[in-house]
Length: 454
Image 1 (cartoon, helix red, strand yellow):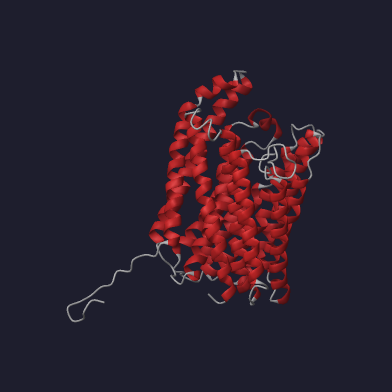
Image 2: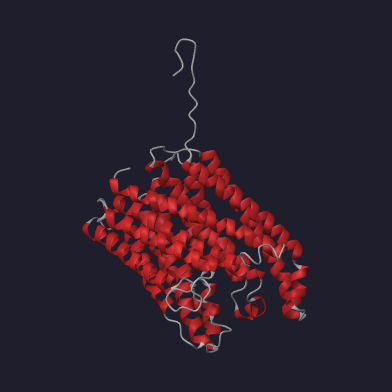
């Protein structure tokens, strides 16, 4: 560890991993409710479980991004973080806001209150006071990292990371705008949800992946930066107008069907470029880095993102197909693999690289870490295939033949059982990963007859 302020990242990683555990456990619980619908229905209804699952995902990923920024920016800028105190205050605000949101969801507190109660918008259910806290924390973060970069060395990695993080914060402001017209509401709602995950988050992903490739492979910075600019240009070109694939059936003008179909088809390109980038960098690499686990997560991130966000996204992005598949289990298949590949694996890659350095055990528990990769990735891949088949059957029975929704759900029970099994593998993998990161490996001390054992 070159800079003392990089230790800030450790606190962010700890909070992120705690929320990661909550997220996967809530996902497993939601999967069980699919096969046993009355389970905890009075105590913790499905809509609350799903809310906790999806919100914990968003919050832990963003917390991981913040931690990654606090780790890599001092190294890239060649100076300490502008204000470590501000960084810890920012984390405290995020933790308080998260706990407040969880308690509000779980116990349905202050229902109907415009300031304290939850809102009825998927992913943006946070009470207004929590949203305000997120904005304050984001502004503190942006001031802190921007001042660090402005006073230090500028690189393509920090420039693009800052562009992504500023975009993330500014686009979140649309979460405060909730028009009465449902079509208008959905148009602006996607400004947050789509332009985050298929826009500015891709910039964050590309910059963190570029940093990891630089450190793990030893390829020249110039080569990495050229790839980075191409990937970012492709992501913005396709991702911004690709928002149109959400406008097909919400009452927006018909021309969005063609704009959405064309540009969202192009969204495969940046994800393919990221996968090619990762493998070419490893192939060209001149360094045999000891941290094989971080390299595995980095390659896994690029590969699974291409399949989850790219291929599975393309499967149902054309409006003629989407007319039938919209809102079926095919959407769930795409969503799970895309989020896992692009952002979950990315955070776990930077955790795997940074935490041994931060804790002075470089590297450690690699076998367990890599085992967790195969458990989680295998479980998520199987879940994706299962949900794809479930969605295909659902589309045909419900959207083509016109069978009743609940009758169709009965037909899908076998898929939901398999999805739950896949979820068990993912949860075990997640817990193994957390254990590998935090519990030191026991060193085996060899002794011989001539020297006493220590």
